[in-house]
Length: 121
Image 1: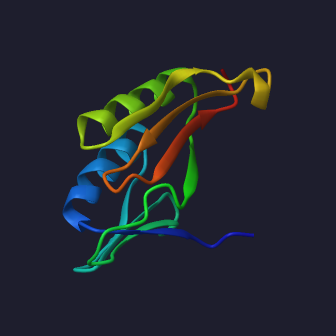
Image 2: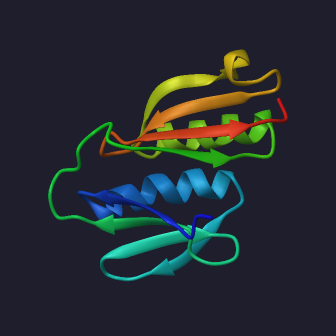
């Protein structure tokens, strides 16, 4: 269904430090890098950050990244906060989304919402 998702960011290096840390905690690495874009993925580039050159519109988007369990959700959330992101919802159960739904929320350096989720909580 989806081929890839992209966020336009105001500062590629600053955003890369955030996403490198979050994706590293989830076991994913960079799949592409150029002067104007960086992409992450397991089997090819699936999540892109692209230099926009001007401020992004905070809150315009939301992406949910899959984690393998509670520990991975917690590690990715901590990594994101330590690398320029902001807490937007501490790791914890979200029973209104499902009995085993465990998630955390971050704002990336441009204020875009990133959810880290595991259905194995």
